Amino acid sequence: MSPPSPSHPHPNSRFKKTIYTGTFISTPTLGALEVLENATVGVDEGGVIRFVERDVRGLGGEKGLDSRKHEEKGLKEAVTFSNPDTHIHASQYPNTGLFGNSTLLDWLQKYTFPLEASFSSLSRAQHVYTRVITRTLAHGTTTASYYATLHTPATNLLSTLCFHHGQRAKIGRVCMDHPTFNMSYYRDESAEAAVSATQATIAHCNSIDPERGLVEPIITPRFAPSCTSALLHQLGALAKEYDLPIQTHIAENPDEVKLVGELFPDCTSYTDVYARHGLLTPRTVLGHAIWLSAEEKEVVKAHGAGVSHCPVSNSYISSGLCPVRSYLDLGIKVGLGTDVSGGWSGSMLVAAREALGVSRVLASVEGNKAKDAGEEAEKPKEEVEKEMKLETTDEDKNESNRLKLSVEEALYLATVGGAKCLNLESKIGTFEVGKEFDAQMIVCGDFSLGDEDELGHGGKGKFEVRDDNPVELWGQESWQERMAKWVFCGDDRNVEAVWVRGRKVHER
Ligand code: GUN
Ligand code: FE
Image (cartoon, protein in one colour):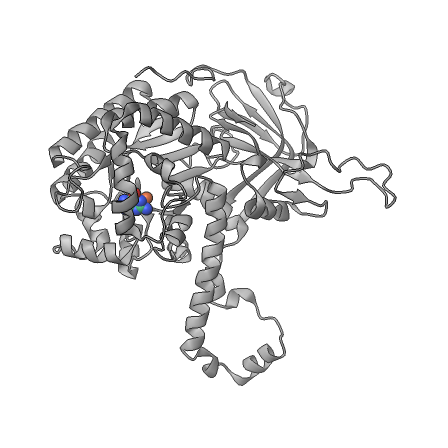
């Protein structure tokens, strides 16, 4: 297979020092937006942020950097944060939107395994993986933690393609050797075969990016039912030997949880399976985690593992409602994943939107449960009277309301939360000196009248933007409101450009 022909400079080439000007938005802490208006961010030749200045223009010269700017477009745009997708199956991309009314275990058999098996064809892999990378970059996914398939050549190709397209990525060769759960046409012959194939993918990653600056292997037992105990043990040992992250699925679906109990009778829980096999580490990303018990959450917390919340997939292959707030309350790392093609979109914006929707559904469900349990009857008379007078009560005093995520919280999960899950928080997630410049430039539609008076004289804002811009700003919105409009109404048409480690990797 010939190497991809990159349309950009080689990832290791150095760039011109660059000063970016504009509005920089990030979510350094859960629930809070940081908006740096009229700011300048200086990025060095290696893509590292050298300075961040608020409310200043033209300081670049004094800092000794070239003053090459990106075009300024005023209030319509914001340069905003890196967006790590903490759980995406690159190989399942052609099935995006296809899942019928299936649920996890039948979906795997009917839709997923046959598609993944077709990646024995390297030309198919090249075609699909190129598309996945370019489309996710176009949606602003600066980093992706990919599940590939069990094919070594195709997995290696995914690493090479990510490196050349400049997408920061973790690349996982999917391991699955269980002789009865897996289909005979798509499984590892033995634990040893899975381990040596994984080692080959690690060696390939190391050869293209020895410093793991952009791409890094990730140990990927598909999930407990797919793997023998022998394989799980060896993968745990491999992660330790090579100092690598781990990704897998956990407690996505009640039937799956039951199956794990039957397959691993000596383990006390699904979480215990991974813990006992050395697979629960501070570098482990657990996909889904919908049905964990309170004790299991404590174990996840104690091991420092992170959770990849995949709300679109959870809703559409009807796995359940993930209790995200309980993880946040425990201080467990939470990021967002698209889980293509359990999820029907590769857009992290769609994932953030669904996270908001699911948290509201969960709040309604729990609120109704509380009512059914007769909470109302036990309320003091004055409180009931107060509610009857339709006086508003403090939203946060209502337990079920606390389950709702705010837009700022969803954006935190999509950025810093994901970076923490992938142990990349020292490199990406916010605009800070010393971090690498991963960013996307968002352009919304300016439909304000500008300076125009009622008779239509003098305005300039109107109709300057493409008419198909899905995010309409009418001039009164605060930054919080602009971000909310973007999260709920935006798509890839708003993503004007994307940078990873200082390199422009997408332009609309
Ligand atoms: N569990 C095991 N494999 C998969 C997969 O490919 N997708 C999802 N969503 N769950 C899984
Ligand atoms: Fe998945």
